[in-house]
Image (cartoon, rainbow, N blue to C red; front, top):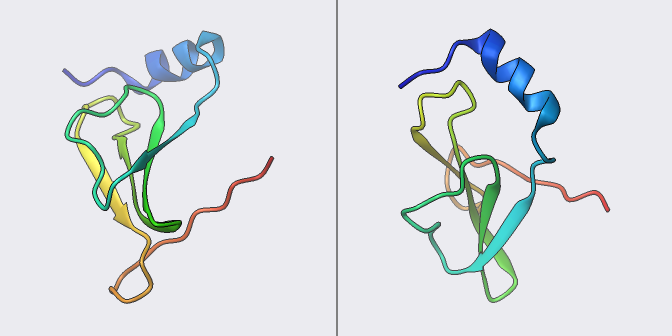
Length: 79
């Protein structure tokens, strides 16, 4: 079920902050948390980041982080 965007924006105010969960694997797990990002890391090398679609449809999105593939993405952690 796709939630209306206005409802998602309102709910986002009251929900806890999003977090990054790091898993030791070369691919993200098949079951993803509802709000959090999952970073797949193997031997200190980031492989992919996965999350559920922010529009509310629930689809799984996976972005590759390894530089050898095209296109690839990058992720930065600020803390």
